[in-house]
Image 1 (tube, rainbow, N blue to C red):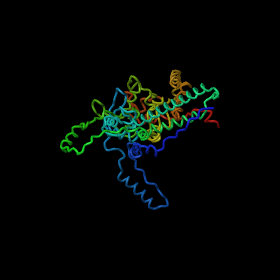
Image 2 (cartoon, rainbow, N blue to C red):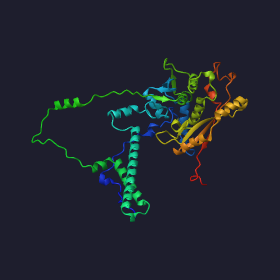
Image 3 (cartoon, helix red, strand yellow):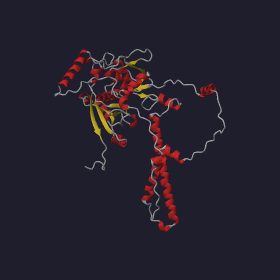
Image 4 (cartoon, one colour):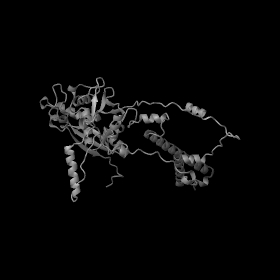
Length: 444
């Protein structure tokens, strides 16, 4: 026979009062209404059986042809090159908000993702009430950790009590712990979890001590001028906080905003002069090596080219591309953005040497084999990690073209790329989705 614990149901809201309301969430659909920092003007839907719809579409089309609206901002957004961090810094707070809210570009230098250092500092110093997203996540994880520790303690105490009872009365020993013990302990743990997440229930169970008050027969009159002076002296002076955080753009994000969208200009940190697209392309390729290498030594399969071709490919398909170093991959693909859902795909960029020129000599064949050689252990480890975090592994094979010759007009005599568009058109991307096969889930 086992020990039957009396089940304890979670306290109802009527006993301990209503649960405190959660802080309102920002309207992310309104904040991130634009998927990119450019405006699109689509035509209204055409209804064939409605003559007014045809006239409406014709009017909108003619108005756009005669008076074309501007899709780009009047003043280009600006960023600066940082050779030390091999990234690009956006120091203007308004520009940083635009790039984050319209496409989720970059990350805060003092934050995990969204630049929110200033809000966190205001809350820490008591200037603003509320919690940031990082604080809410930290509190939720701490509550979950405390609940698991309390549940483990209750289970351990129940088992020790059962063993002690069986030791004193051997006739009750049946060799195992009945399931009712664990189920009742789980109910107790769920009740305590509800209490820990409900501050009103905790305050209702704690007796309040009587507060002492000054009893007088007649009220004490205090001059209003003295009260005002005392209150003003107690109030701390308002602090003016300076935002010490900037937005960091990766090389892929900076080139995409400059070359593909045309909404950003990169400036030299010393001269503050704009940098051309061809020079920015060379800078990004140089910083993909460590230490940085000059332009003539750049190969058609350098790390930046492979990464940017895949980044540009998925951005053009409508995905929000974020760095994937947290999960051991190159990129993460979000459907709308990190504030809406988790990433659906984890991308690993791999070179593919399908052109016949890469197998023309024995030396090239050996070099290609060395670059493309991957072990099954590596692939199994990466796929296992993505399966644990509920993401689908996607292998992006970038077909590497042969080196550019001087007669094609794409590069100059120094080896710098002059026509970035023609240079990138030579690359192609093939996608391969890889899923981990498990017997329980894939029986058919």
